[in-house]
Structure formats: C-alpha cells, structure tokens
Length: 106
Image (cartoon, rainbow, N blue to C red; front, side):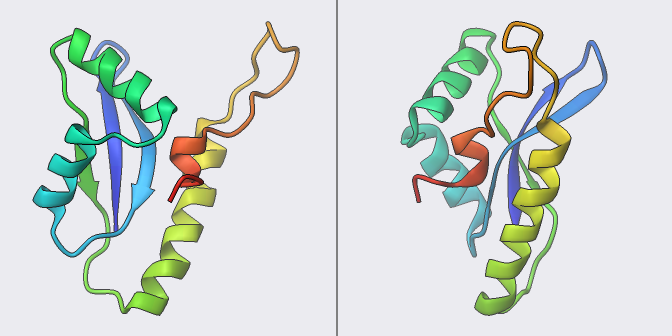
C-alpha cells in the first residue's frame, strides 16, 4: 500500500493525493510520473514539476494478501479523503472529493 504525496515545507505538511497498491513501488512511481492518468493528477504533477518538485511515494503497508490489500486501500482512501476535505468559501461548502485520490479512473 502506498500514497503519492506532496510535501509543503513552508507549512510542514504532507498532502496525500493518491492511494494505491503495488508489488514494485519504484516502478509504479515511475509509471505515475510518465503516465499520470486522470486530468487531476496531470494538473497536480504538472504543478509540481513547474516548481522543480516530484511526487513522493509513501509506503505505509507491505505484505498484504490481495483481498486484504483491496480492503486496506478502500479504508485508506476513506481516511485520507476525510483529512483532505476543507471548507471552501467560494463554494460556500465542501468541495467534491478528488477523483485522483479516490482512484475513480482505475
């Protein structure tokens, strides 16, 4: 299990942008960079590259069976999505959950 994250050194924060699973983390990170997938991830990674930064991969669980990994992935997506939700004054409410974070384009 892993998360693609962005670090903000100014505010000492780590933002989770995507949750997934893989057996080969370095290969999967390279694939994400070369083929970001959804338009949200393309924008996110493009913004990082403009700042001369790259997405980072945080591995947070290893060795799960496929069935367990699917359940853990769903639980992690739910947990991280609730952390990423914030009030948007322009919307006068909460923004929709990020498709990239929710893996909808899988």
